[in-house]
Length: 457
Ligand code: UD1
Image 1 (cartoon, rainbow, N blue to C red):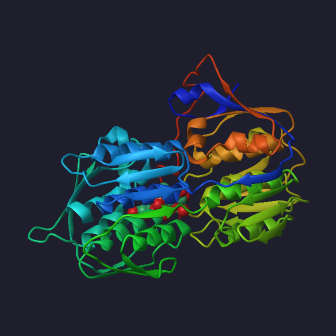
Image 2: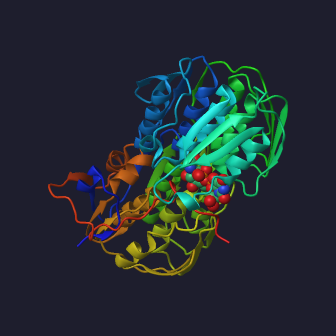
């Protein structure tokens, strides 16, 4: 019997078979950051000149963003982890088709670049059928403050610069919450606006700093990215450049957590250690030994002590690593409390970990975990990107075999995950099944990374 949830897709017929109680050993190469690469691809729309992006991870999300850019008229050449993006023939005639943007929240982040460069944009609301509750208010209100007229008609966001003006104009924007996507949308929009824009209560995530670094190479004038107040002096034109995507701190953190959970010793590289400070601090607090040398981090997993975690915007503990860290805490000595503060429905992994023998009580967004000695292998379906990663870590820890389904989520965000784990010594194989599963076996849920709900109270 398979437990969990999944969407209809051909990935239904694939799973990862994991032999439990594995140990990791060796060095693992960390890929480029998915969330950086996605927004940098959107930013490439701001210039008519070529953008060369290096260290782009090969992921289904990146592929989807590539399809969107091509639909807009971008000439995109994909050379293994390197993208050459030429946007000189882009034109905005009709809206992006819903099938293209569906399931890729980052597709909506194109709106700022399109509006600012072409004076208009038509982008469907991101995500599945749960349209009514999807918050994009911070993006919309900010763009309106910059001088856009926006209406939402039949699920399409139609934006244009107010009549008689051909440019957005700089202004002061104060975000209600430090939304990563809204900060990115508004930075891109303000880059080609007239005058100075300040964004207060801006998100400070490393991916935003990466975006600003690339935009500045393109000729933008952005100051203080990574701080709570970002200043953008609009310029008339942006030019081409080459840019290397920063390492993926979430992938890096996932490997560190897997090593901690199995008492293993591994080195991850390349990474930017201060992007992972909240994570390495918690891993140390829970008993692992961490050594940082240049752009690599070595972890020696030892005893595992229960620790408490509250997810928070950067530099706090990332929500994207909450599920993997919960898997680690299932076998900790003592109790731990994990509080999800960013997303409302990001606890889908809890009941699955309990099925494996974990002892977790969930009260809204707070998981109270009593560490157990062992958990047991099972067949499970991951329901979103990070919970799939958590289940794989649980499968590695567990006694016996596990089969983890729902790989369409995993393949969105982890490049060559199973081959990297295999190289580190884990017995893991992708299986292709002959039969697909009934709807009863798969319950459909949404992916919090795709369909974020309002910040929990
Ligand atoms: C990005 C990341 C995602 C990560 C999240 C938080 C990408 C492609 N995805 O998502 O992996 O988990 O940051 O670090 O970069 N909100 C509003 N109004 C808005 C926008 C957001 O209320 O207009 C709320 C959301 O409901 C959520 C919170 O703000 O509660 C944070 O969301 P946000 O930072 O915008 O996440 P994303 O940019 O979508």
